[in-house]
Length: 61
Image (cartoon, rainbow, N blue to C red; front, top):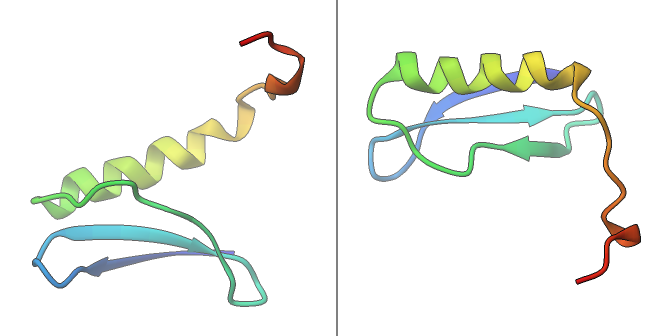
């Protein structure tokens, strides 16, 4: 897998995570003005590997 850091059509920084087969499996939900902020977003996703999984199908709406 790899993170790709790029600029969108509006000039803002974005990231996407690609699987080994080239499919995009995650992407930033927002554009960032500063590259450093975009890199921080990538680091937050990297740290989330330890996040628990919550089955929302068992929750009553």
